[in-house]
Length: 113
Length: 113
DNA sequence: CTTTAATTGTAATTAAACTACAAATCATGT
DNA sequence: ACATGATTTGTAGTTTAATTACAATTAAAG
Image 1 (cartoon, rainbow over the protein chains, first blue to last red):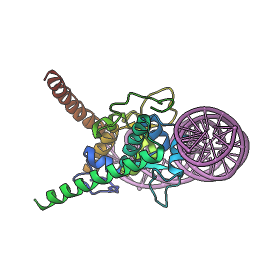
Image 2: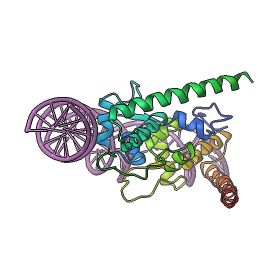
Image 3: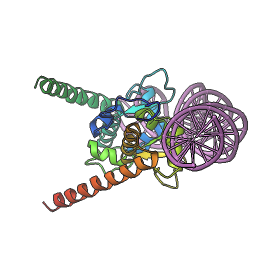
Image 4: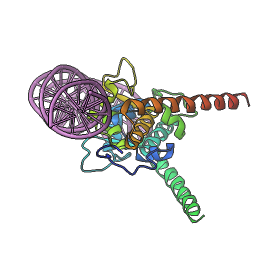
């Protein structure tokens, strides 16, 4: 074993894809690139409260997690289908809640096995 | 349909987790947070050619993709096990190549179905 | 054509990342 | 112990990215 042993929970630091995504938060530039939505527009949506950024004292710039990026992509699709921004955001919010609660049930069931 | 229809490949902009990860590239700050390895150290590893950053003319700062982040985590583990930096990096490189070629075979097989 | 929604532009500022040094620490051999 | 190369860490000064706080367009609906 070498020196300080930095941050050793060793055994498995190795993240699977899902773990990785739950840990990940990315900046607005990256989100703009991934989604094709301009930074300016993302800021506007966030100012209006339609999407939310990670809230943490150390972080001073806008950061988004995976769920939020999915939301953004869904909103974009709905906009293209003709929904208003608000309607799109609401619809996505509801869809997300459904998926979320279904996932929690599943998770819960798994944990008992 | 509304206005400009921004960047419409519609149908499925919806990314699954794997798609998302292949598109994603993240900055050094985020990588440092995820991996627990200081930015300074990541820069050093990159300078020595042990890890590589995304290479694109528009990008001026260090960006890493998912594979590279996995590499970083593996290197970290091996360092804690007592390997030299270079030995760790080599070992990881080989491991990655194996996984990669196995994956390609699998992918190839799937595509034919 | 007026009003509200939504997007876009931009100057000035703050935060994050970069480079290019140098110093400190660690591992190994003599 | 000392020297040596490997690795990590520190930092001043600079560049790039993101933010705010305005304002101006453009689009959709009555």
